Length: 173
Image (cartoon, rainbow, N blue to C red; front, top):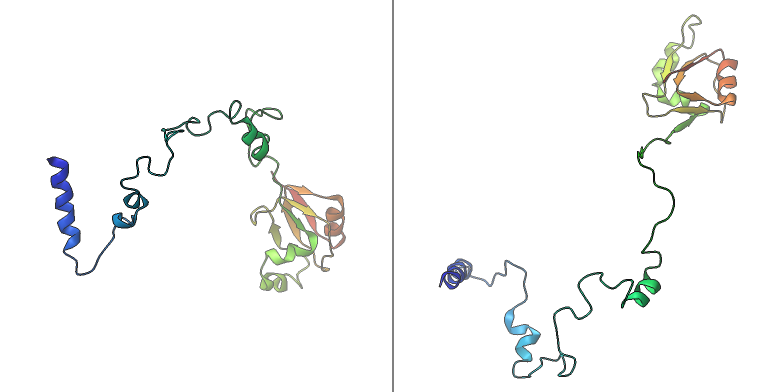
């Protein structure tokens, strides 16, 4: 009685709308295939190999047994292990973003460069670590203006080019 009452209760809430509203997105019952198959004993499933619940097992069962051909053919390498285990895996342990010498000045605003252009006693500090880079490498050329560069790593060429224009390389952890 309870479930039938709830169903009817919900039905009158939906049916009061002036247009047919399908809130669940389910298919209309009268168009379902099963309505067409009423009266046919096996409902299109055949009499001999009856329609049973899970004849081959549920889910991925039998991957190494009765479904082996399918797994080997379409999912090679599904079973087993490969390589060594890394117990304390540090995901970003080997990440080292690089920046070239030619792009160093793009990390500071243009007016900073112009401000320090004539001053010989001071130089701007470019902290590449703050901008998300760790290593400075030596592609390109620097303008003839001293600069203090702070980074975790410098390549030999980058260090030479920075020092050639009167700059300084500062290592920071």
